[in-house]
Image (cartoon, rainbow, N blue to C red; front, side, top):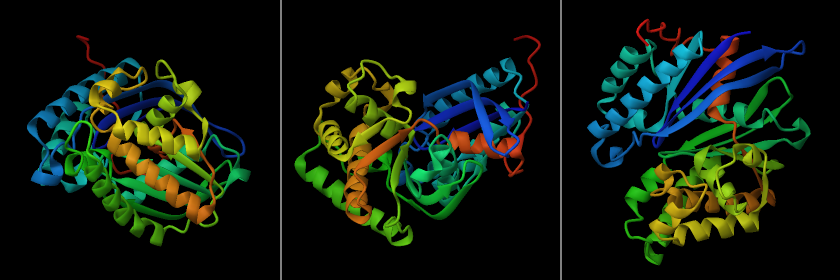
Length: 335
């Protein structure tokens, strides 16, 4: 049974999944989590303005990579793939990031395209759903971009029909528009206009008209779900595959958009690293809810805790991608 590791380094967070993979006789895969972890490194901090990865962001990422490397050694992981997304694609000094990954983990970081990010997110998101609920539309609201992808799932393979990556995400939107605490009505309107205009290109490319089920992945969506469900603490098992009516989604999003920072920080399921950007992420989700209700008649949102990490792990196990893959760091005899 192979033990693989997937690392997703996005704009706001860096996440690790170590999993054992079983391939069934019908060709389908079953992932058993060995370890799943998320750290907020805010790698994309200021990238829109400077086009460079900030020294403090690189240092936070370095600390996370050292911790992940130690976890890979402790779990005897054999194969590793690290995928970097929006912030790294846009940075002039991204070679500093590449060298750091190579030095600490001994693997090459792979900067994936927005379309590849969408495809991997889709594969991870729908794997636990009934194929008869398709076609699916999967939305991944990240720190620097939002991926929209449609397709089907036959319990073995994901068939992507269309995908698009838009340069609107919670970090970029917060830095660009939402400067006050809480943001003013004018700031929210400007951010919403920008979001609708930016996502319009996605909906022109990705036909969602036949979609039956909307699935949202990643930290913005799962945090919105936790708040909507009035959880006292974050509970991944309760959040995974939770279903929310769109009225509840919109109400929760507007609540988070208007909430002062100290009130957001006091919410039980709120990760400290999301406090400053959850309002902006909620705005993106609210716009998506409006568009999908109008274009596809969708009335509910399914939340998936499984996303691009799971998609990376599945491909890693099947050997579908050789880029960015390598062996885990060798055990440290002094550890």
